[in-house]
Image (cartoon, rainbow, N blue to C red; front, side):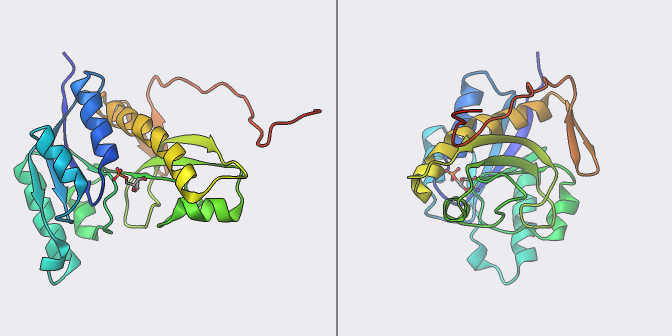
Length: 221
Ligand code: GRF
Protein backbone atom coordinates (compact mmCIF):
# COMPACT_ATOMS: atom_id res chain seq x y z
CA UNK A 1 0.00 0.00 0.00
CA UNK A 2 1.54 3.33 -1.19
CA UNK A 3 1.95 5.87 1.67
CA UNK A 4 -0.24 8.92 1.01
CA UNK A 5 1.57 12.26 1.19
CA UNK A 6 -0.05 14.93 3.38
CA UNK A 7 -0.55 18.09 1.33
CA UNK A 8 -1.60 21.62 2.20
CA UNK A 9 -3.16 23.58 -0.67
CA UNK A 10 -2.89 27.37 -0.82
CA UNK A 11 -5.59 29.10 -2.91
CA UNK A 12 -6.93 32.59 -3.67
CA UNK A 13 -9.57 32.07 -6.36
CA UNK A 14 -11.71 29.58 -8.28
CA UNK A 15 -9.80 26.47 -7.22
CA UNK A 16 -10.08 24.41 -10.41
CA UNK A 17 -6.60 22.98 -9.77
CA UNK A 18 -7.70 22.08 -6.23
CA UNK A 19 -10.78 20.39 -7.78
CA UNK A 20 -8.53 18.37 -10.08
CA UNK A 21 -6.46 17.20 -7.08
CA UNK A 22 -9.63 16.28 -5.17
CA UNK A 23 -10.92 14.24 -8.13
CA UNK A 24 -7.57 12.46 -8.67
CA UNK A 25 -7.41 11.57 -4.96
CA UNK A 26 -11.05 10.42 -4.80
CA UNK A 27 -10.45 8.44 -8.02
CA UNK A 28 -7.49 6.62 -6.45
CA UNK A 29 -5.05 8.07 -9.01
CA UNK A 30 -3.13 10.31 -6.57
CA UNK A 31 -1.56 8.98 -3.36
CA UNK A 32 -2.14 12.11 -1.33
CA UNK A 33 -4.34 13.40 1.45
CA UNK A 34 -5.47 17.06 1.56
CA UNK A 35 -4.80 17.88 5.22
CA UNK A 36 -5.53 21.62 4.90
CA UNK A 37 -6.68 24.19 2.37
CA UNK A 38 -5.81 27.82 3.16
CA UNK A 39 -7.25 30.82 1.32
CA UNK A 40 -6.09 34.41 1.80
CA UNK A 41 -9.35 35.48 0.10
CA UNK A 42 -12.56 34.96 2.16
CA UNK A 43 -14.65 34.97 -1.06
CA UNK A 44 -12.62 32.37 -2.96
CA UNK A 45 -14.86 29.84 -4.74
CA UNK A 46 -12.24 27.23 -3.80
CA UNK A 47 -13.69 27.33 -0.25
CA UNK A 48 -17.06 26.22 -1.62
CA UNK A 49 -15.32 23.20 -3.18
CA UNK A 50 -13.85 22.39 0.26
CA UNK A 51 -17.31 22.49 1.85
CA UNK A 52 -18.71 20.18 -0.86
CA UNK A 53 -15.90 17.65 -0.24
CA UNK A 54 -15.77 18.15 3.55
CA UNK A 55 -12.12 19.20 3.44
CA UNK A 56 -10.39 21.02 6.35
CA UNK A 57 -10.07 24.66 5.27
CA UNK A 58 -9.15 28.00 6.79
CA UNK A 59 -9.26 31.64 5.74
CA UNK A 60 -6.16 33.63 6.68
CA UNK A 61 -6.78 37.09 5.24
CA UNK A 62 -3.48 38.86 4.47
CA UNK A 63 -5.25 42.22 4.94
CA UNK A 64 -5.50 41.49 8.66
CA UNK A 65 -1.71 41.43 9.07
CA UNK A 66 0.78 44.29 9.24
CA UNK A 67 3.60 42.48 7.44
CA UNK A 68 4.07 39.67 4.92
CA UNK A 69 6.13 37.80 7.51
CA UNK A 70 3.34 37.96 10.11
CA UNK A 71 0.88 36.60 7.56
CA UNK A 72 3.29 33.85 6.50
CA UNK A 73 3.94 32.83 10.12
CA UNK A 74 0.22 32.34 10.61
CA UNK A 75 -0.04 30.23 7.44
CA UNK A 76 3.05 28.19 8.40
CA UNK A 77 1.60 27.51 11.87
CA UNK A 78 -1.73 26.35 10.34
CA UNK A 79 0.09 24.02 7.91
CA UNK A 80 2.30 22.59 10.65
CA UNK A 81 -0.63 21.97 12.98
CA UNK A 82 -2.27 20.03 10.14
CA UNK A 83 0.91 17.95 9.73
CA UNK A 84 1.43 19.05 6.11
CA UNK A 85 4.45 17.50 4.33
CA UNK A 86 4.15 19.21 0.93
CA UNK A 87 2.78 22.72 0.26
CA UNK A 88 0.89 23.06 -3.03
CA UNK A 89 0.27 26.59 -4.34
CA UNK A 90 -2.78 26.47 -6.63
CA UNK A 91 -3.68 29.95 -7.86
CA UNK A 92 -2.30 31.47 -4.62
CA UNK A 93 -1.72 35.12 -5.42
CA UNK A 94 0.77 35.90 -2.65
CA UNK A 95 4.59 36.05 -2.80
CA UNK A 96 6.05 34.01 0.05
CA UNK A 97 8.74 35.40 2.38
CA UNK A 98 12.14 33.69 2.91
CA UNK A 99 10.84 32.40 6.26
CA UNK A 100 8.30 30.24 4.39
CA UNK A 101 11.06 28.57 2.35
CA UNK A 102 13.06 27.90 5.52
CA UNK A 103 9.97 26.31 7.08
CA UNK A 104 9.34 24.03 4.04
CA UNK A 105 12.69 23.64 2.20
CA UNK A 106 12.14 22.15 -1.30
CA UNK A 107 8.64 21.18 -0.17
CA UNK A 108 6.65 23.95 -1.89
CA UNK A 109 5.27 23.45 -5.42
CA UNK A 110 3.63 26.03 -7.70
CA UNK A 111 1.79 25.87 -11.02
CA UNK A 112 2.15 28.65 -13.61
CA UNK A 113 0.14 29.02 -16.85
CA UNK A 114 3.11 29.61 -19.16
CA UNK A 115 6.27 27.80 -20.30
CA UNK A 116 8.73 29.21 -17.75
CA UNK A 117 11.08 31.01 -17.89
CA UNK A 118 8.93 32.76 -20.50
CA UNK A 119 6.19 35.03 -19.15
CA UNK A 120 6.58 34.93 -15.35
CA UNK A 121 4.13 36.99 -13.25
CA UNK A 122 0.48 37.65 -14.01
CA UNK A 123 -1.82 37.94 -17.10
CA UNK A 124 0.62 35.63 -18.84
CA UNK A 125 -1.89 34.12 -21.27
CA UNK A 126 -2.62 37.65 -22.53
CA UNK A 127 1.11 38.37 -22.80
CA UNK A 128 1.64 35.15 -24.80
CA UNK A 129 -1.15 35.98 -27.27
CA UNK A 130 0.00 39.59 -27.65
CA UNK A 131 3.64 38.53 -28.08
CA UNK A 132 2.59 36.20 -30.87
CA UNK A 133 4.23 33.00 -29.64
CA UNK A 134 3.12 29.83 -31.45
CA UNK A 135 3.32 27.59 -28.40
CA UNK A 136 2.54 28.17 -24.79
CA UNK A 137 1.61 25.89 -21.93
CA UNK A 138 2.03 25.44 -18.20
CA UNK A 139 4.75 24.62 -15.68
CA UNK A 140 4.86 22.92 -12.29
CA UNK A 141 7.97 23.95 -10.39
CA UNK A 142 9.41 24.05 -6.90
CA UNK A 143 8.83 27.55 -5.59
CA UNK A 144 11.82 29.56 -4.44
CA UNK A 145 12.33 33.14 -3.31
CA UNK A 146 12.05 34.49 -6.87
CA UNK A 147 8.77 35.02 -8.76
CA UNK A 148 8.07 31.83 -10.78
CA UNK A 149 11.79 30.93 -10.86
CA UNK A 150 12.27 27.60 -9.01
CA UNK A 151 13.45 24.27 -10.53
CA UNK A 152 10.98 22.90 -13.07
CA UNK A 153 9.35 19.51 -12.43
CA UNK A 154 7.00 19.07 -15.44
CA UNK A 155 5.73 21.19 -18.36
CA UNK A 156 2.97 20.80 -20.93
CA UNK A 157 2.95 22.50 -24.34
CA UNK A 158 -0.12 23.70 -26.23
CA UNK A 159 -0.44 25.48 -29.60
CA UNK A 160 -1.44 29.13 -29.75
CA UNK A 161 -3.79 29.79 -32.69
CA UNK A 162 -3.96 33.00 -34.71
CA UNK A 163 -7.52 33.67 -33.53
CA UNK A 164 -6.82 32.95 -29.87
CA UNK A 165 -7.79 35.40 -27.14
CA UNK A 166 -6.31 35.35 -23.64
CA UNK A 167 -9.43 33.47 -22.50
CA UNK A 168 -9.40 30.77 -25.17
CA UNK A 169 -5.70 30.16 -24.55
CA UNK A 170 -6.19 30.14 -20.76
CA UNK A 171 -8.91 27.49 -21.10
CA UNK A 172 -6.65 25.28 -23.24
CA UNK A 173 -3.76 25.66 -20.77
CA UNK A 174 -5.96 25.04 -17.69
CA UNK A 175 -6.96 21.60 -19.05
CA UNK A 176 -3.26 20.71 -19.08
CA UNK A 177 -2.69 22.17 -15.62
CA UNK A 178 -5.27 19.75 -14.26
CA UNK A 179 -3.21 16.83 -15.65
CA UNK A 180 0.38 17.84 -14.81
CA UNK A 181 -0.16 19.06 -11.22
CA UNK A 182 -1.50 15.73 -9.89
CA UNK A 183 1.27 13.97 -11.86
CA UNK A 184 4.00 16.12 -10.27
CA UNK A 185 2.61 15.49 -6.77
CA UNK A 186 2.37 11.74 -7.52
CA UNK A 187 6.07 11.70 -8.53
CA UNK A 188 6.81 13.43 -5.18
CA UNK A 189 4.63 10.95 -3.24
CA UNK A 190 6.51 8.07 -4.89
CA UNK A 191 9.84 9.64 -3.86
CA UNK A 192 10.97 9.73 -7.48
CA UNK A 193 12.00 13.41 -7.63
CA UNK A 194 15.70 14.26 -7.49
CA UNK A 195 16.90 17.88 -7.53
CA UNK A 196 20.45 18.67 -8.72
CA UNK A 197 20.92 22.45 -8.72
CA UNK A 198 18.26 23.73 -11.12
CA UNK A 199 17.63 20.31 -12.72
CA UNK A 200 14.81 18.08 -11.54
CA UNK A 201 15.14 14.38 -12.46
CA UNK A 202 12.31 11.85 -12.23
CA UNK A 203 13.75 8.47 -11.18
CA UNK A 204 12.69 5.70 -13.62
CA UNK A 205 10.96 8.40 -15.62
CA UNK A 206 9.69 7.73 -19.14
CA UNK A 207 11.60 9.65 -21.85
CA UNK A 208 9.56 11.76 -24.25
CA UNK A 209 9.99 10.62 -27.87
CA UNK A 210 12.21 13.00 -29.81
CA UNK A 211 9.61 14.60 -32.10
CA UNK A 212 9.48 18.22 -33.25
CA UNK A 213 6.11 19.96 -33.62
CA UNK A 214 5.54 22.96 -35.92
CA UNK A 215 2.91 25.66 -35.53
CA UNK A 216 1.59 26.34 -38.09
CA UNK A 217 2.13 22.82 -39.48
CA UNK A 218 4.64 22.52 -42.32
CA UNK A 219 3.06 22.10 -45.73
CA UNK A 220 5.91 21.34 -48.11
CA UNK A 221 8.88 20.25 -46.06
C1 GRF B 1 -4.13 28.89 -12.79
O1 GRF B 1 -4.04 29.22 -14.17
C2 GRF B 1 -2.75 28.78 -12.19
O2 GRF B 1 -1.76 28.34 -13.12
C3 GRF B 1 -2.46 30.20 -11.82
O3 GRF B 1 -3.68 30.70 -11.33
C4 GRF B 1 -4.75 30.01 -11.97
C5 GRF B 1 -5.60 29.48 -10.85
O4 GRF B 1 -6.62 28.75 -11.28
N1 GRF B 1 -1.40 30.32 -10.86
P1 GRF B 1 -7.55 27.93 -10.22
O5 GRF B 1 -7.85 28.84 -9.07
O6 GRF B 1 -6.80 26.69 -9.79
O7 GRF B 1 -8.75 27.61 -11.05
